[in-house]
Image (tube, rainbow, N blue to C red; front, side):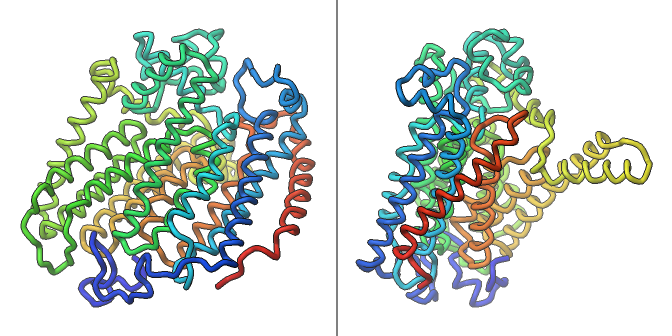
Length: 542
């Protein structure tokens, strides 16, 4: 529960729980009431922008030699730039330097976007900063992951009239196909876990590029940028509705290094799914009046139901890219039911209406994919990731620990069974937490947008695989509704640590682990020098 929220009291009513202005909120604490930056702080902002932009440029340069390049790497034949493909250790050090600089620039930027500060940077200043940092990243070789090559291969399977939810790239396209060769070995025999809308868009990309790998990656990055643009559009609007400083929400949710590294550089389809989810939520709230737990509950406004249907449809499109977005429909339904009066009958009626919208939109997306009713086949492939063991997944780590303890105690090697058991527990625990958050939101104990972020975090955290970019699912909705200092501090620390937790290669270091200490050391020395040059210009707490 957010501090100060209790059912029916004055503190709760003053919190901007539902869309609309927050009556009783002090003017100094209202979003947008802060003063603009003074000349000294604008100079500090310029330094931070340039520091982060240099880091982004170094990432682009380092990606030439250490990124997840196509099997037939065109950079190899380029004059000068091709040298980086032959100097992998140097390129990795450069990439690490860029990563550290972007993260440090983001942390410094946060001081100018901190809620409660007397002078804050504006939303437009934050947007321009994001453009400066993102522009060099658009031209990087994919890093941190090779998933984009799976996108290309799975879309081509559908384009050839086969079912990507039944066969993997190796079986459908052959191991010698240029698209298959870019897919990591562990995923070559697995079906697609992505929704029919994403497969449809992927088919269009493959058709436009003629299966050219480089241009295909470029268009998928454009798709990720469209998703990022939707996040940037929706976040400040949702933040205003929930009483959070819009520029702070943009800083934590859109300028977050996890977003820049994994959604833009890594070309993950989370960008499109999360973007659609947030835009749908914002559209649905356009005509929703502000209500409290004790009413009054006004009659339906003109066009209100249409906005709910439109918002739910867009959220469903996000789920047709990646299924976690569907959880947003539950929390939207809670808000609609509370707006109607907060009774069980209202909740059931709302759930039925949203279910109809969900099934209709999803059916249209499935049939439009060219797979017919097989477009629903992705429901059976959502556990594809269970074929690997992620060290970042708490339930998998718990299984390893339990199995290892059994070996130490002389009970035999039961690691596989322990992991399977812990994953079953996680598969139950995550949805149970999400259900509890839904119930608390319905009973006016929790802001639904906070419940959405926490629920997505719980479902993904207790899943079979956890990757750094999964945190974005939780961080972005929470950035729009949770403005507390403790949350902001924790989210900042976790984001910064996870942003540098994964090396920027998109592959393992089998046989090359010895280069990591040298590249880290070189990067830290370079970053220390860079920080020393600009330290006196950086903002202090104010």
